[in-house]
Image (cartoon, rainbow, N blue to C red; front, side, top):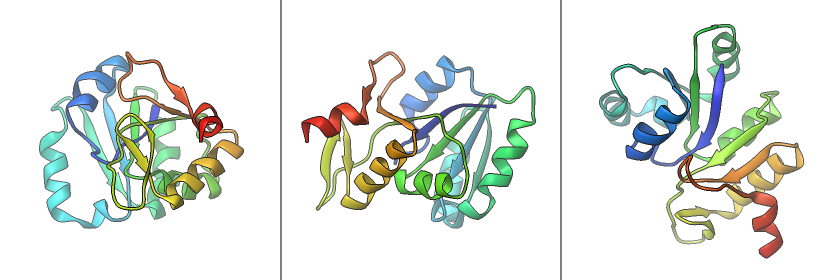
Length: 160
């Protein structure tokens, strides 16, 4: 069962290891990203970065829906799904994936991005994907750590 859907461009790092995994007693991480799944160096790093008691699966969008359906049928699975970008999540929701809520973590600032929340920057394409998810009734919220109060996308958009 998926406990948390998260967007985090760093994928597995200290905050994920020490906070999100512990808070939700995660025993499985599914990373969904078409580029990561085809990058052997990143795949090697992720295998090293994951905690030893946590299973790791990395897949592209072509396998994601079937994999998540299979995961939902596993009674003992407590899964954290991580997307590198919100655009990937938007693609899957358009294909039928139901995401009740999504936590947005860090997204690095680059040229052409706008700051959405602390340590989180979106390109125009990512902002459009976030708006689309919001319109599709996905509760999009920005939250770096489980101990922090989340900030809703709707509240951020009101200020923009």
